[in-house]
Each structure stands twice: as C-alpha cells, then as structure tokens.
Amino acid sequence: MINIQGLSKYYDGVCAVDDLDLNVPAGEILGLLGPNGAGKTTILRVLTGYIRPTSGRIRIGEMDPAEDIVPIKARIGYLPESIPIYRNLLVYDFLRYMIRVRGLPLEDPHARIKEMGKVFAIDSVMHKTVGELSKGYLQRVGLAHALLHDPEILILDEPTSGLDPNQILEIRSLIREVGREKTVILSTHILSEAEATCDRIAILSQGRTVADGTPQEIKNRARQHRSVTLELKNADPEQARSSLESVSGVDRVVPLDGPETGSLLLRLECSGGDDPRERIYQSVKSQDWILLQMSQEARSLENIFKELTLES
Image (cartoon, rainbow, N blue to C red; front, top):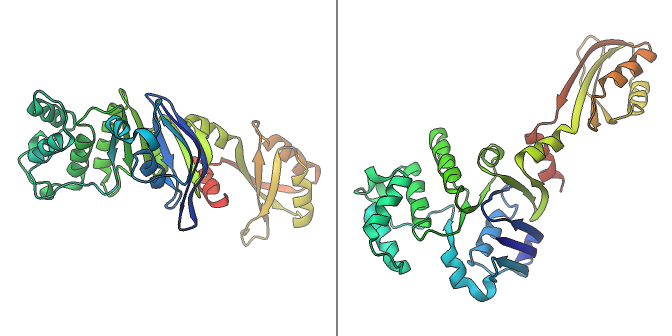
C-alpha cells in the first residue's frame, strides 16, 4: 500500500528525516514511535502532501505524491495534532460544510453525517458548537472529519495527546475499530499507546528507524537481554568483575552502590536466549565467595525504547 525508499527531509540544513525506508501493507495499523524531534510529524506531512521531501521515493499504491497528489489526498484521511476545525460552527454544520468543500458526491449528506455520528458517538453533540466540546469529543469530531470521504488510509498525528485516561481508551478503541477496514499510520511518543493500538511499531530516533516489528517481536528481542544483580561477601571488586565477565552470556559487570554492610553489589548485563544464573552461580562458588542474593530482571520494552532512542 505505502512504500517509502530513501526518504530524507532537511529544514535549513537540519536533518529531520534521514534516508528512511518503510513499507506499510494494506490493512495494517502502524505506529511511528519516538521522542519529540524524531521525525514522526515530518514523515506524516510528507505522506499527506503538505510538504515535499528533500530526496527519496514514495509510492502510495501505484501513485507518486510528486505527480498525483490530488488523487492521493482523496485516498487519505488526515488528523494532525492541532485539529483544523472551525470552533464557531455547530458540529453538524461543520461536517456538512466539509462535505461541500470537498465536493463529495454524496446523494444524502445527512445520512453520511448520521453514520459518522453513530460510529464516533457524537450524536449527542451535533447541536453544540465545536468550541464547547471537551478534548475527547473534539478528537472524535476530528476523526469523523478525516473519515467523511471514506478514505483507504488514515493518518493520525499524536491522536491521544492531551486526553484523560478514559478518553485515551475510547480513542484507542475507535482506532482499532477503524483499522479493521483501513490502513492506519499513527505517531506517538508513548510506548503503551503504540503497544495497545498498533499491529506493528517502527521506533524512530533522529529521523532514522532503529527498530521495526510487531509489539511481540520487539518484546521477544527485549527478552534476549537481561540483568542479574549479585550481592557478594568476601569478594575483591576487580577479581569479581574479571571472573564474572568471563562467564558465557555475561557482557558487562557494573558495580553498584552496595549496602553499608560492606558487601559487593554488582549488576551483570547479559544477552542470549538462555538463563545464565547457573553459570554465574558456579563461578561464584568456584571463588569461594559468599552469595547473599541473586536476582534476575528482563529488560523491559520501556528500557529498550529508551536505549534505542538515546544511543542512536
């Protein structure tokens, strides 16, 4: 459905998107996940034709935005972070006006508005002005606006920004519902948001993709990395570090601030699919140190995200 090859975008010499490759098949909900400044909004604006890329090739179906932007926009529904909406109009009048502005060939505009009201549960606010609406209802009206022309692709920029927890759950549910029939791309900097809503996540940092896969695939990669915390007694710090770093699966030994009892507290950063604790225990035992505690913790998805976006 959407194919991006070598996309780059510079603003006055500053690189916002750096040689990005990305494919989005039809019917997928893709989350662009990254901190502020990672290039998420720029990618969405390029896809929707609001800005031109500095370089790269984009295909939406068989069409190129550089040549076919009008028919492409007819296939896309776009909800930017700041919703472009007339706050002094009634909700019904706003949706009716947008049908006229877009020149949608609808035999019964009222029926389409009524359908959108049912899908997004905004029937009860049709008689209110847009400026009266809560943030949650404003997002619902924005989604209805983006889907008035029944596009194949829905692009959402930070769709739950500024919402309370209940509103976030409601918008997530609506996105999942819409995603059953359409291709959806959404941006967010909240990991739980992408995990709960998306079929696939592309983690971005400084305009580049640093990880790409389903939430489960990225979790599985996280499980390959774990840390083991040891508290040892009668162990020399340098000897302990050297001995434990020689254990298979242990990548690095990091000293921690130990308790006042004088014991040695260490964090062992490990990788690989198997559990290294038995080998670590045998190494401790061979040195005749006293093992006071050993605990293991898999690196969380949050930690993986933090490391990827800080280190790249």
